[in-house]
Figure 1 (cartoon, rainbow, N blue to C red):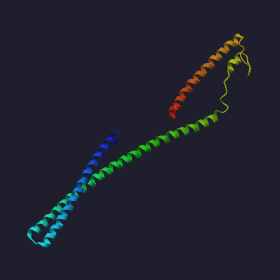
Figure 2: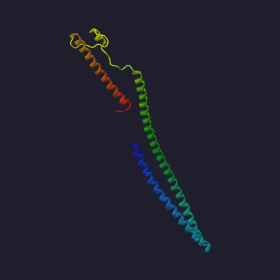
Figure 3: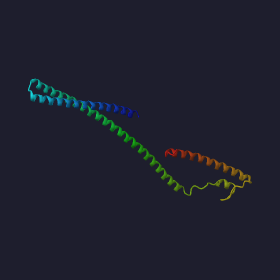
Figure 4: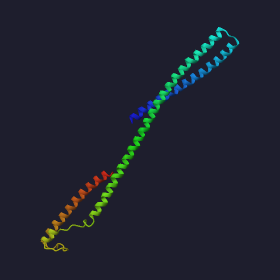
Length: 196
């Protein structure tokens, strides 16, 4: 931000200088025109009266034109230099804007690609998970109770109650642990794909 402010200030200074130089160049061109008009009159006077004074007057006008022309050329060279500096600043600002826009585009491409890769991986994982997401059962605890596949604990049986309570605690703990890890993973994923 500071660089742009500095360049803008420098640009304004150069543009003001360019304006003053162009005014000066215009004044010098007007001066040359007036001196040329005087020279034409002096040359006409010389045609009428070939005196040393008239010849001297013509020489004076020619010297004044030459001196003013050199001054004009110096001002025009300075205008050219200032214009070149203005052009360089404008080009630098244009390049900075291009670079900024390209960086913003790079960030959008980066995010879109990251999200697309994630989406493709999720689709693959969902496909691989198919048929593996059923509920778990407490086979070992059920076997300890003498139960077969598809049979359930009998709440009135004290031995079953202990095994059922252990199964319920284990189930709640497993769900709690999975929920915690899942929420942490989702938070990381959302941060990664910038959805939070």
